Image (cartoon, rainbow, N blue to C red; front, top):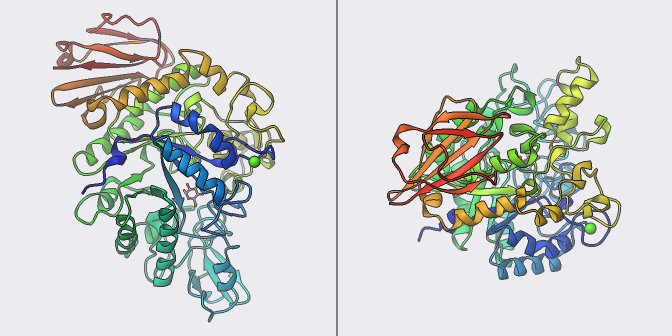
Length: 555
Ligand code: GLC
Ligand code: CA
């Protein structure tokens, strides 16, 4: 039986530390999530993806795990987790957990043992190498913090860390490590979780011999040797078997993945992953990482969207997202902070009606924007700090801070804005991180009350999407590919159509309606401006700032 329930779903992502504080210590937690489950349900989503909830020294805010079978004391314990899980299920919400197994924390008991000597039970759990003639084992850079190797005197060896120093890479070639992963999966599946989002899963198999990378590529020079490595499919096949014992699905994160490589996981007979997160459409205003910025170009965004829609059509299923805990807020990037409501609603339309399973990141549904802190010392994200101190160091502090404002992962990790009381109603204590001062205007309470708010617009979009076979299953066709202002696509299913029109312009634009579409009998289903008449301009169309419309036509 094909497990395809996830194709009909929409997920809400929770980055718990900033979601809602239920016990007043300033840190978001599962007590808070429990209280807000009915809010999440009210959005019209069908499931929750939890970024890591596990014990962690927080060198990378949960993505450095020190115990895979527990809940971080800041967030609660297994009892409250079980309560959240069962209440979510009662509400008809699925729950997926983050599975972070490319690396652990250096404070995980496996690593603490492993680094003690070359011949203990855990010595082969990580990737240890001797130095080469007094130098590092190879020339790889880490993605987060300097070189990818760290020396440990007890073993007189180096361990590999593709991310931060406190995130040593597991040795997945060791069958015992793979057994551990499978046991961890069973632990959570037995408790009743419905699936996993698998962190940088395409990195877990490293090329034999760990050859040097191309030295002129900064930061990612080793990537060709650890991305889609030689045994990745075998390893994922093993994990898949565990999932197949349950009604579970797997979503793999594939940084820098291509459509071809994504299909090698998601299509064909040995389908190891159901869904994948790719990054292509997150590069419309940057190159490789948000820290290397370039002006936003709609054409780049549309090209990425259409490429994935076409490449996966009939073969695999897309994952749709515009935000998560790794990217700055989308309005601040592809929309406009001057037109928060208009661009926030338009951005919702532009991706929610493509074919695929959409994800919404906490705060996106109310139009939260990037925070701008004054000094680099106020930022806490390990990769932001590293970028600041590594790249363009000769530029003025102002210029470098501008880059940080536009790129930092902290921008989307500020506390969720619930109302306009102190600390945005996130906590009754002192919030663990800065609250964006715009909470006075942008908050859940206010948007609940305003019929045309971003929040209520998301609800309308999701409700419409859910009952529309065309939105769920329809084929995708793009119009006006070369326009730098308008993104327009059609979905078709069994002779029924949806037409999605989005303006990315800060000023009104008019354009001619495509000839092939003029004859159809269009009905306006959704629009982010109120006073749109249905008859208006089906030959000649005028769109206001960041206007978005969805039309349907049934046979
Ligand atoms: C993924 C996570 C990110 C984390 C990194 C290392 O990209 O989404 O937050 O820092 O992996 O685990
Ligand atoms: Ca708390």
